[in-house]
Image 1: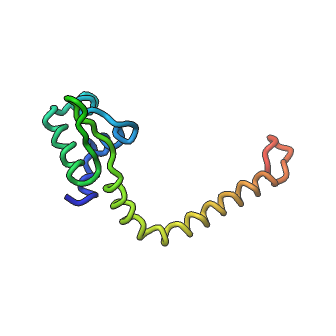
Image 2: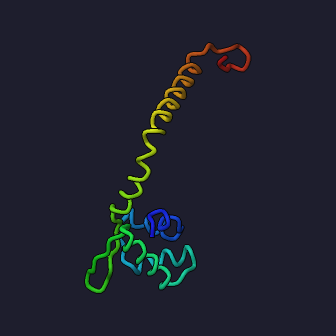
Length: 120
């Protein structure tokens, strides 16, 4: 499964958000996702399996529990794909930030008119 197919599913994105906050036992993930999305334990387990097999989640056993956490490998694959567009967008976003700052500075330095106390 392609990385963007994995991330296209809102349940898997939500699981990643949860795992990004802290490591969680599979039962905890099932409880939260089941309540939010109304899906079964088996469905949540399948989503965890997809995340694990696609490099987005790690799992480790601790006694009787299986603990899940985010695996940066999947996120690096996404970042690598997005990286090809950074050279195109970053200069444009930097220029936009400069124009916004210039506009704020001009408004701040504009003389105040008598009517309404607003700047010209």
